[in-house]
Length: 177
Ligand code: SF4
Image (tube, rainbow, N blue to C red):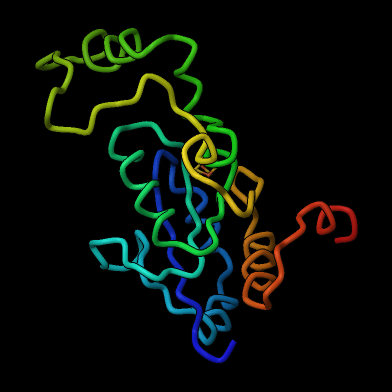
């Protein structure tokens, strides 16, 4: 590819650990910067998800109405969408609330555990969905990147494969190093 690849990273319902692992690529980020343009990410200042993105890494499960709105928009504007880490792939940690039901979770978080002004927020924050679900429950996913978080080596491997025009095979990576 002669032109730089337009890369985005997105943070839905995750702990940001996957993004921390992205930053753990350390000096390899300089090599990547020669080949990609980071057009949207929690670590850059762009406010609106742009059109014409080549690759998007999505961290986190879809847990709120706002996550759901964003993932449809991101899919529409992205060529290769990567479920980035176990929360995106399986809903992982965010899904731990699912067995209890939404009312019980809100009661516990905002009423039982509140020391001041106990009340469930209404309107100020995006409403939670009844269950936290993986990204592929909503949109087509092209690459599933495992790990909690994926290691910097795995992220680097995946990005290099995509930049070279190949779909990353994590099974091969695990078997053959
Ligand atoms: Fe955090 Fe692990 Fe989820 Fe990544 S996969 S957002 S590190 S809990």
